[in-house]
Length: 330
Picture 1 (cartoon, helix red, strand yellow):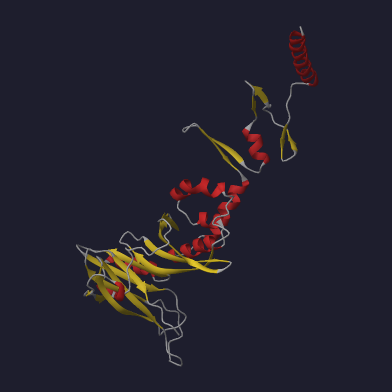
Picture 2 (cartoon, rainbow, N blue to C red):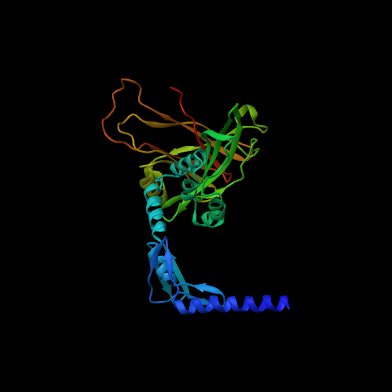
């Protein structure tokens, strides 16, 4: 008897709740960030699910809704996305090296948003959940990245720029080793982006080009010749005309096994700057081109005009070519 009374009471209470809701009116209210939003499409409960108009919600958040009839898709874009797109546009690096530097700065400061902004569309799609799940705050509190350096730069015939980064790690007790990672940068439209990130390494990669004293194979000198602008094929001349304003290097495939190695110092405020080839050698199945930037000597008379120093080498080989700058210690 008590059980039947309890069931009857429960049914009555449910009826009273429903009746009071119906008496108060069946129109549901929509609140976005505490503000009551009026819409020509009412909020409804259908099969125990609350259905709300997406256009009203998006516009209340400062966004917009578009309908693509051909694809049968609804697109929602909020103001935050517009703002982020404009910010990324302002941060867009002008060179591959700037892309890597900004990305590495994001690693050092644990800024996932900055790292994400340097990625290609494909990498963004793959890594979005990883960044979002940690609220765009990457890395660990210990060890942390104390500093970073670009250890090596290489360039492929596909105009892909491969950088090896060294991250100096530290804890409260002092240095905690070095992390290494290879990053590949390429053009996506008109923007330099990271297209590949190899796994983080705590030990030296055996595939790296090593100093002469550490190489296990024989080092051979590779013949090359310096090519003037007039001697270059038209397509290489066009690349020189476009690239010389920035500090960059490119490996360009010619006919057969011919490779053109373009070295550009970028903009210099005076004359007297040049490129000196230190060595071109073959080791470990690769060709290493090492060069230095030669600067005017103190007190040297130079022309006071803006210059764009560059040089092109011609190398005959099908092996991968790695280009590295030897920095002069002043």
